[in-house]
Image (cartoon, rainbow, N blue to C red; front, side, top):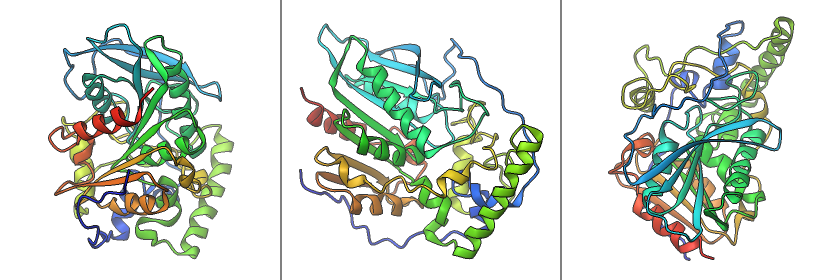
Length: 365
């Protein structure tokens, strides 16, 4: 497969002011943590619910069931398994779907999974460790290592299902979990194809800021404050949390307004999502600032990678950089006029037919 660009990438990278960076759900973690030491919040482990509490309507073309499985660290993960209602007796190709960063499986990843199941795939959307209905303490902490492992644990689970052909498993990572997906597939050779949709490289943005704008001195100051926050947390035997995410105070950049429009309104709000007015622990950025996850992206080859991103997305440069670093076969699909958040839930914008054809072509026996 040859490299493909849908439109020219010569679009000026969005510039984000420091105030907006401090507020952003994902990328502002380091700065926000450094500026809000001592704040606490309560986050509780969630028990799986049997009711349909998704942000999208249930499909009558798909069977749905709640599942649990453990990752390599012994953390129990919670997932929603979607299966085509008409599936016959033959084993099917399967997809593990995760993201966005700070979201839950009842949001974007579940929509992707259900829609791909309508197209004939077994699809598993899951909550990452320490979030949503998955286990792990403390709550609402993220890790580039453990969250990468979560994808491989999902592949473990899928490969044990009697309706799944374990030699035909793919991965979809959305937003910050797009980077996690690429990192997982680089080392997990069981996965035959991967899609990164509207991706972030969380380790890059936390360690360097948007457009790599954080200076070495700023980075050092953030790490000094986060390091000292560890003493505060240890003394209290509980972590401090950052302020609620995606609250608007006025004057935010458009992409911040877009995040609010998804996570804090009826469109995409879910009470278990970190991004829906909850928050990460203050020290969450530490491991992200010290561990670049896309170092070995070229080792995904010869398995194919499809990057999907919006033309107007502030995050577009993440996909373009990752695309340039990846080896063939690779493809970059830029969606005209689309923003970052449009690829969370806009079914008229997300190229599901393209995703289905990509996996059908590459997940072959």
